[in-house]
Image (cartoon, rainbow, N blue to C red):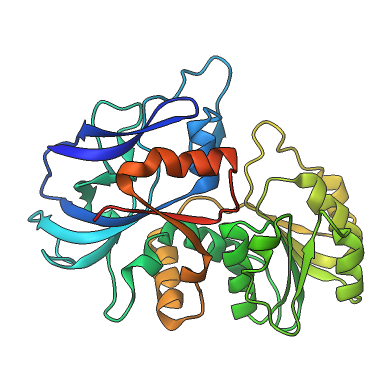
Length: 332
């Protein structure tokens, strides 16, 4: 089956090209994509050639992962359903993760239409929910996963390091659980999109020391530290003001620099969580929170590009030509 896709052809190079997808099987769903949401951090890392799989950094002797179809999240309309798929039917608006593709370094990818997708990776969008709001559902789920992992009580103080999408959704999830949240970032435009309540805090680390600010904001100590940018140093700097039996959540990509000193954690009996990937139950829970309005996604979209202008979208992301956060490709 012929499809159109975003293709990373070489390091730092993205094109919009025709590709081949396999003929759908009885377990598959064929989707006409309407929007796909770029995961800037993960996709950028693969496009730069830094990863070989998932959260696995690419070693010097590993082959370069090109060409490949980046991404893992999109929404669209079901055009065909295999005989062994019962939960969706033609005409349904759905969310989908990765889809099948042929002739690429990886045999699945995200930004492709029509998208031949295994039924287990397709979710019907509830009535009344804006499809665009769930077009980044996997990445929203990463933030949700960060926010639900640590043990905490209502009123506890949590610091989220990173003002990217995962940082925002981790902060929103912690707030939904009743935490007081401080978001630490480096970009005024991104920090300004944080839905800050009276009890919350924000820090621009370019202008203010996060440790001093957090200490003044939470004199009784931090219960939770969430790192979404891949900085062990930033986490360790906050250890001295973390409560005994507090929790660390690590969701950044550290490459080959991911060594954590357990002895430093032991002094305060800290627990480390290292969430990764997605699961069906977590996507279900995230979808419910978007539907209820407890997780906000639309205010974090800063750019739309037609899908055939994907090279310009990735150039913006990879080269930081302008303030950018959520980037969506429009396929229709």
